[in-house]
Length: 268
Image (cartoon, rainbow, N blue to C red):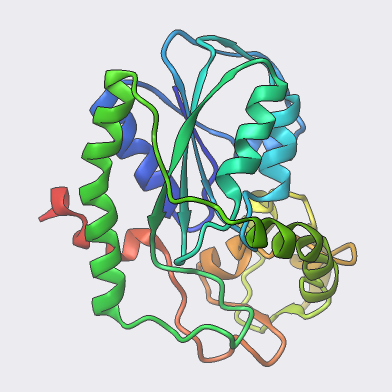
């Protein structure tokens, strides 16, 4: 079974392509993560877990879910990570989780996809041509990944250096606490109160608050807590383009995989 968490569609696409080649099923982890639902997930075939990379690691809430989830049946677990260019130490940390559960870690693959993190000016916006190239290149790797899993071999990724562990492990929680506040998220008057942002927030950091205008009661999103995962699900998926982050995101192009699905080889 192929399990996935995805915000803008990159990881979901890869997961479904792998499942199609393995003639297997997929399961979206978002509703399970949101509700802390650790019910049994049974699979007679290897588990393939597809996840994005946040700050050089698998998202903390995905890791926490996997630590508590009851995966039954086959004991083999593969991972496939999607990132904007650097997967950090996601693989080794995933392996640690799997082994503590008494399961067999069968390695990981790292795919470079279009990055969707726009709440910073550290990264240049990708041109459409580069977005299309990354999607096509990752799609080409899916066949190889599926064949390795089908044959029962291990997935192999690049060597991780000790310096990477030393830099990432202590820095990650500090970055999340200091660089990922929620207070800078806000909505413009384009907001329709549809509530999609609240429905898709993996940490339930968004509440829909009632507001009366012109004699009618509507609602608008309010971000709660001190920080969040900065998964960008709310800002990227807003159908009205009404969500912004401080003075960083106004004017920036939004990214959703479905807008570029034509670049995938099977769509041509």
